[in-house]
Amino acid sequence: MSDLLKTPPDCATLAHPCSGIRVIVTPRESDIGGGFLVRRLLPAAELRSLGPFIFFDHLGPATFEPGSGIDVRPHPHIGLATVTYLFDGEILHRDNLGCVQPIEPGAINWMTAGRGIAHSERTPPHVRRQRHTLHALQLWVALPAADEETEPAFCHYGAETIPLLTKKGVSVRVLIGSAAGATSPVQTFSPTLYLEVVLEDGATFKLPDDVEERGVYVVSGGVQVGKTAIATHSMAAFETGMEIELKATEECRLVVIGGQPLGKRTVWWNLAATRRELIEKAKTAWQEGRFAPIPGETEFAPLPE
Image 1 (cartoon, rainbow, N blue to C red):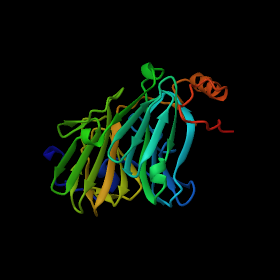
Image 2 (cartoon, rainbow, N blue to C red; image 1 turned 60 degrees about the vertical axis):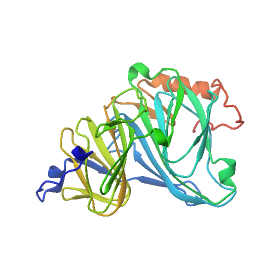
Image 3 (cartoon, rainbow, N blue to C red; image 1 turned 180 degrees about the horizontal axis):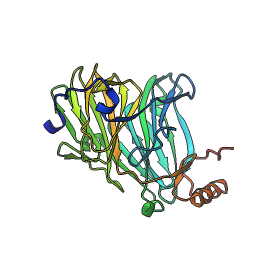
């Protein structure tokens, strides 16, 4: 991991040119009930995608009283993969392939929608009975055009399978892709990077430089690149080919995302595709009930008006 840690270079007072920051995005926030905040970073007007990532939501942290929780009713996806990662809490995933998977902190859950899948996400009954906290990230990855109609699948990678790298003041979990000689077991369709990084105050972290597009999201705390600060709940996208070092201005938790960009995608509701006709086909199939049912579910989310 030592190749990722260096003393930051001297930097000119013109922060952006020296820092290599292309754009900094702040979230659109929505309260979906009971003080449960969802912050959306991607897509944004100034940053539609980052590497293969086309969607980025930060959920919570939110505390639920006994008897309450989340209930995301059955809904469809096509043309993408969902990536769910929890810092705290538990979500029960069900899909129409018959997969039933508790999603717990530290695990990576990769659902390939391909030609079409439906799933639900709910707070499990045993968690709902007590006061609990949920804190999570939900990301979507575009599938390459050649794979966007592949067979749907769901893969769960337990927390114990995810590489953890530590050095004084720095902790890195390699969720997807490779960093510092460690490689995640998560199988992807294109070069993809996803790291969780925890820094003590004053610690530094150098981003992998063999990734075509890179960005960082500040989950908590704050960092700076050169003279430019990246505040809590902000995402910075960096110029290609530049050496990028982050320095914690306080104890912080970050996620680094990036990889190979896959070109423009049309995104409508939970559907993504290179061609509009694929979205129209999926809309009709969902409206007419032609997606396979999810065992154990009787509800469904209707198409938006």
